Length: 158
Length: 340
Image 1 (cartoon, rainbow over the protein chains, first blue to last red):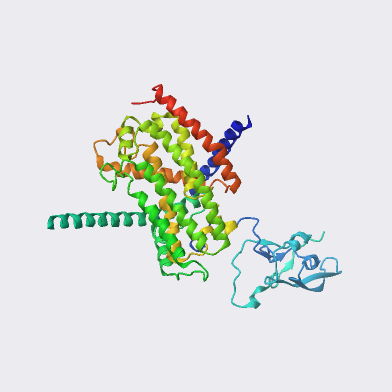
Image 2: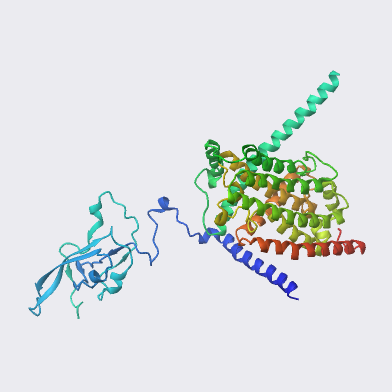
């Protein structure tokens, strides 16, 4: 008797499939997932999990959260991150303390694996949603993530 | 003598004009159908589809056709040149011949023969010879495999197309297409024949889709397995002929379904009976709905394997079809048709 139940199940599942695609077709206007890129350049917003490039956010006092621990540099599988660091004097305790001079990020070598961001203990570096990385000079792909004159935020190391 | 001459040239001229009209109309209709297919496919997959060239991308297929026209006609060295060049014409001409008997409205029918339905099924199965020729003469293993699959498929499904139409011929009592539509003034055949007609319609749609080599029965082309199947070695305008023939064949299958099951150019419930020129509108509208259904199939169902195709035909469609004919005969014998 599996002959007739096969026919029944076949027709049923085919109709089920057509129902799914039919629903897509009816809602096609609202749920379209393609972007008409050059036209919507101004309004285009990339999705949250998009891995554009590594950036270091700064607050309005020009402070970042990087302590210069170099964990990201060690985590990076192909050496895209180099940190040039220095020793400064902590104003409160008077002790010698590590601080970053330049956090250098080679975008041209980066494979967007995200290991540096996972490794960072203070969440100093994050993904940005920028996707348009084309430049005319190769040197522009080497970026210094900390802004000039910026300092580490107080209390990050505690 | 002069009289004979003038009538003879007159009728030849008339034929040529009608042929040119049909060719022009279906070249444009084919381009429109390609555009429609791409837009509908895009919507089924939550994309936008061609929307750049002209309003709603309508000019996209014309641009594509111009590109194909300007391309070089490449061929293989060891191809059988004569058959290789003949194949696309075989396919496109058989597709165009079938158009002659289609009744677009009460007045617009080029060739109303008394075996219309038989002629349609006969002609639509000749196209496979073109595909076999193309696959064989290309001297390419993928093309040959594709062509052989096409042969297997068409020979099998031809039966189901014929038998499902035969079921409906029991109701109409005539093979002439204008006669078949005349019968449906008492209600479309799918209503008149209710259950067996519905089964026949389902079988016809499945077999008809297989007949046109469209997905889910597109293992003739099977891009992922065979390159492009039987037309792997064709380029430029010859490829465009195969492409156009596919869409014209789809139109023909949809048109047969409309004539046999949905009342051809008759309006639903006779709402525009006083305006006979609206017949073409109803005919084309219904055909477009069926074509949309075939596109829906294509973008929903996965491709079948060769053995699955043969199982579907010989173990399911054919026995059901034979049973269905008897069922329909019993319905007619007991006068159980629904007539208005």
